[in-house]
Length: 233
Ligand SMILES: Nc1ncnc2c1ncn2[C@@H]1O[C@H](COP(=O)(O)OP(=O)(O)O)[C@@H](O)[C@H]1O
Ligand SMILES: [Mg+2]
Image: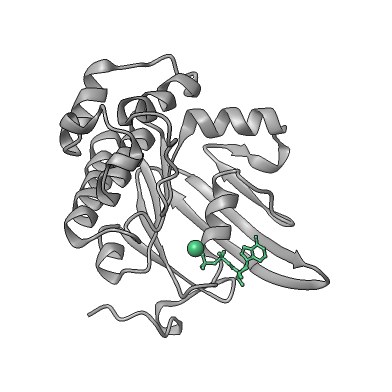
């Protein structure tokens, strides 16, 4: 079977005033359907830029992203948005919950905007139960701990059973206990639903939750031995 996600020679440079800041300098790799891949690398190595490109949140200067046979570059903005909502669950380091909505609505809103038409109430309750959120659903983000907020964000990402889950440092702001809940849930969802997961992380322990590690440095994919921060022990 072919790759489910393909990154082909991705280049992205930010322009800050008159200065060019290269973030990706030719990144290529592929991820099989159902694989759980982690991406590690020092700060500034281009991980978040890669995350935005894979999620169709920004465009590359050159190169291509192919997901489930669709080439992002050839899709219109509307098609790209539609694909993102239907196929991808996002988790961010800073949760990105809507402050005026309670936890239940923050999760349910993903079902409403996805257009999947598959609002599975039993699955909603099960996800909340597995994430220990059942008693917190009436609370707004400001009334929840950081760990609880990230668990709500994860429930939001998973509730539509997306084919792909993209996570950018999802445990970056969490204590060990909450990190473990989040990582275990990502793994379980990956295994039960055959989801393709790509998770960026700084933490070598978290990186081990995946099947395979992609190392980045200076805007490129490198071999593990070329990643000086990487210590597998
Ligand atoms: N919006 C932006 N404007 C200008 N430079 C940026 C922007 N986002 C990222 N960069 C730069 O691009 C490079 C890669 O950043 P990023 O993708 O955030 O890496 P990482 O997530 O690995 O820390 C860094 O040099 C960073 O300073
Ligand atoms: Mg980053």
